[in-house]
Structure formats: structure tokens, C-alpha cells
Amino acid sequence: MSSHDATLEFDYETRSRAELVAEAVAREIGEIDDERSRTTIEREEARVFIEIDADDVVALRAALNTWFSLIDVAERTADAGVDILESR
Image (cartoon, rainbow, N blue to C red; front, side, top):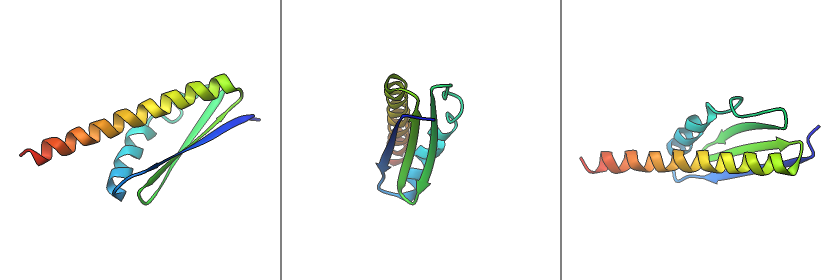
């Protein structure tokens, strides 16, 4: 039973951007979970939700840092793709 949890909510300007980011990070679900933390991801329209359940605060902090980093990379990569397409 988890004693610590957090829900991360990310709002995007479009549904397609939310879908792109969610799909980019969703492949990590189950890959980086361990016996101390578990993560789920959901998308509703232009919003992405990441739910983290952890057994202790240290595991929660580690999972939060990981997921914030993964989202940041997905967002920056999506931005770079848009910039390349717009420069053509």
C-alpha cells in the first residue's frame, strides 16, 4: 500500500500536442517503475495526467524528478520539430 502520491497535470495548447507528449513518455511506464513506486499516465483532450504512487517520500521525489525531466525533454523535442517544420 502506498503512503505517498502525487498527480502531475500538464495543459497544452492543442489536443495533438498533448497526445504527442503523452505518447512520447508513456513508453517509460513500467520501465522505470520499481518496487517502491508506480506510475500511470492518462490524457484527456489537451491535458496529460501522470499519477505517481510511492512507498516513501524519497521514492516519490525520485519519481517526480524523473517524470518532470521526461516531460521536459518531450516538450522541447516537440518544439524543435515545430520550429523545423515552420522554417521550411
